[in-house]
Image 1 (spheres, rainbow, N blue to C red):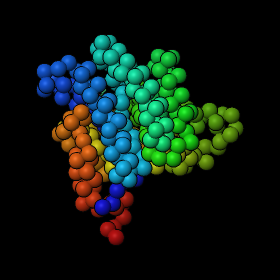
Image 2: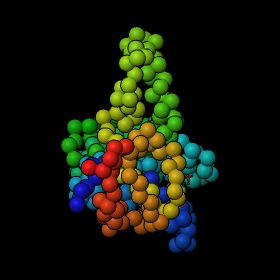
Image 3: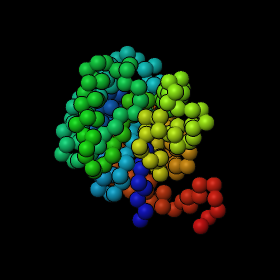
Length: 234
Ligand code: IPE
Ligand code: IPE
Ligand code: MG
């Protein structure tokens, strides 16, 4: 079995899963966060080296203030737990997205998480929080433009590779497999640049019910694909 080096996940369906159990949406988010910890370990044990998950989009601020608040509380708790998990499981954590809109204490915890795990050599775990791909690209363009103004970069030096280095995913290889749970067939502003040649897998299973067996199914499907990158089949 060919195990993808980098798996990106849009973990969707927490709300619908909770509703189907007659529970409030937030219960789904809590169970979704617990599931993420389990899947992280499973992914690493299967041989996946990079795992990138979408926790909160730049568009998710449009949800009710109560839900946004509950999610932020959950991220605070999750970030603290993750500091321990990263230490115990040798995980290197990176944060994608613009942290500046998050509460100062959450920004601090995220910084601590990244800093304390930076020398770890196990799973590379990227969490996308207040992340939007268009926002990421615009921020990257601004940084590159500023470097041009400062005389550190010439416009003709901006290649695909150079531009990738300005994105939040600098140093992270492109995903091999994208998984979206819970039935929606769209990208919702996730990793638009990085997914150029990624294989897509969509499942109706909602995120809190997505387990190791479901991950294995996705990898099996991935193995049935012929990856071509624009060329002919080898
Ligand atoms: C995914 O679950 C988690 C976040 C976007 C934070 P949803 O909250 O989107 O759940 P559904 O899609 O409404 O069921
Ligand atoms: C995408 O899920 C964002 C995250 C999983 C964090 P959404 O549930 O917010 O996406 P839409 O609104 O259905 O496109
Ligand atoms: Mg959703």
